[in-house]
Length: 180
Image (cartoon, rainbow, N blue to C red; front, top):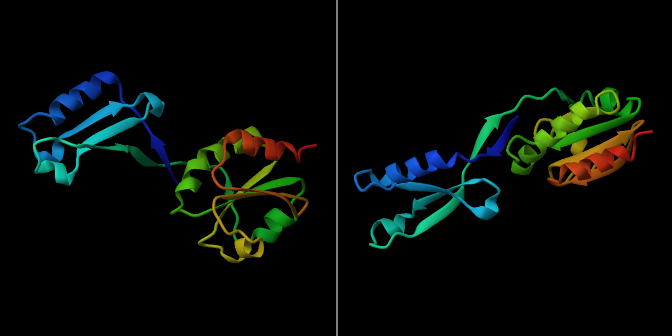
């Protein structure tokens, strides 16, 4: 599963990138400047020339946050339509199921949080991931209309559902409700 991470570079490399990228001898496609916005919590902001500004004398910078996709490894088991009953419904104790899809940006955003929680709650809660593209009948049975959706089951019964990319604290408090 891929996850997105937004990074910043140290100010020294930002200055050198600015000098090189804004050099008049650099090709137009390479004329980019990077900056750190004070309100972006260290995210690298790319200032590039918009196509319309290439013909005018006054440059009009366009802002965007540079995020890079990266592969993440997970120890969370996969559940699908055929293994659903044996792994989730017949499990003893709490089970958390992450309904996701590979094309879903918010799913990629919360993936690291779910992985952290899986490590933290090892032995207390079973964690599974269900790809909604590969196994469409189970999400349909549980009326999953949006992803990411996190569902918590206890002894085969659905107890809670969290929809959307939520903070780690929200997920942790939802899990804590069902621990004895």
